[in-house]
Amino acid sequence: MHKLAAALIGVWLLAGTAALAQTKPDFSGDWVLNKEKSALGSLPAPDLMLQKIEHKDPDLKVTTHTVSGPSDVNYDAKYTTDGKECLNKYGDQINLKSKLVWNHRTLDVNTDMLDAGGAHLMTFKGKWNLSADGKALVETEHIESPQGSFDVTYVFDKR
Picture (tube, rainbow, N blue to C red):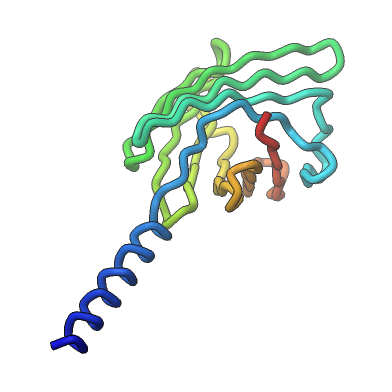
């Protein structure tokens, strides 16, 4: 009887540990781009990039503030992480159609960029990962454009 009880407790503990390991991360917070740890390839690094993320799964809101030389750009986007298509606008001329879905602890973020008339401009295939200590957010993207394909990695530190 004691062996059965010990075995059941062991299975229960294992199941609890596995459930904790599968918990989806919460990306909420204020994040600043770490230019030294990021790999932007041929893209110019911004002078400053901040992301404010509000995440209550499945809802995800991202406010991005980017400064590059004289350019100062703010962009708000709302998503859901349940695989439903989300439409966001970047200015008057760009539409962004995104689908976000969980792949274990990684959030797959796939976006098609379209012009105002609906013509396809670019595709972004991204993955978001939160460090184990919750202090770093890594966003990788494979970008496909008419000029070719390339990969970038943005590393954000929590403020």
